[in-house]
Image (cartoon, rainbow, N blue to C red; front, top):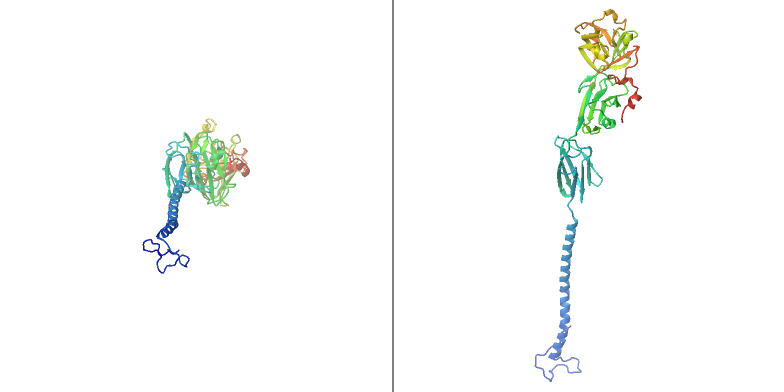
Amino acid sequence: MGVPEISNRPDHPAREPGRAQPGGGRRAWSRRGVLAALGAAVPAVTLSGCGGPAGAAEGKDTSATGSAAARTTAKAQVRTPTVTVSPADGTNRAGFAAPVVVSVADGTLSSVEVFGNDGSTLAGSFDAGRTRWTSSRNPYSGTKYTVTAKATGGTEHTSTFVTKSPGETFAGYFTPEANSTSGVGMPVSINFTKAVTDRAAVEKAVTVTAEPAVEVVGHWFGNTRLDFRPAGYWAAGTKITLSLRLKDVEGTDGVYGVQSKDVTFHIGRRQVSTVDLAKKTMTVERGGSVLARYPVSGGAPEHTTWSGIMVISERFKETRMESSTVGLGDEYDIADVPHAQRLTTSGTFIHGNYWAAPSVFGSGNTSHGCVGLHDTKGAGDSSVAGYRFYESSMLGDVVVVEDSGDRTVEPSNGLNGWNLSWADWKAGSAL
């Protein structure tokens, strides 16, 4: 509102000329009245003028305090990711029968790498929330591993552990030899150095694949031998791969495998020879055509030759044959049997014979159980049947003996699992 005009004269009862008199239109003010009026107005103005700034200052202080508190709370809520590895960091005799597991709390995993000092690596996978990583296989025994895991925000965690070595071990010796070429009857045969009680675990760790593809199934002969074959003979030209993943597989209580390797074999041409001991002849077929026919002599009535499908498992240009080794006492001991090819573990061979008269072959069965072809001493005459058949043969070739007067050879006696039907063969798998 407007401030009343104030006289600068001393207080006096007379009225200033030109000023309104009491009762008039303008009111006269005394100094005391003006001061009283101003005194009354000042607090109101002061309260009004200071109220705004005071309130603003108070609001500003409150806001700053609130922001600091919020920042403190937020900082308290942001936690550093904590990575945990199993086996634990620094473990010196860690187990190797379980996978490696990496987990994180208060974050997620962006990457996990596991390297062994043997050059191996462990692959693995994350769970849906990427808070847990599990290796796809177990670590190897006797190996130092380094685990590097990265979590949210680039946090990196590194740990190491060493797995213990197994107490007892076993290995598998396989036939045929790596990178060799064999006939169509050659199975993949593995003989283990220790008896296997967990056949399923061991068989699962051994796979045999073929190109061109064909179903290949394993069959156990006892607790130390596992053979693989398809339903019929391999196709000529097949490439076979044996994958051994036996390392750290527990074959029996406390006994672990030591091998982890891939081996390749090849199948050559198809050759199947059929020995008819009623006719005393052998017909050699290769690739579906007759390659040769030879007169032969089989086992005498008291020493008949096994019947059935047999596979050549060993070959010797010359070898010693002694009757005592097959339970026949001292009936014979020949130091230089030519062109001998083994058909059974028990001692059946198809071989050259130089000590019998040439007329025997094709006319009589006179041997102690082997199949003989005419040959010459020293194994050097390329014109005789024993030499020619040997030169045309290879490991894995099939020799089928018919009408021998004896029963079918046991499938486990040599590489002769072809004498089992496919259904019976598959029944011998542990899987």
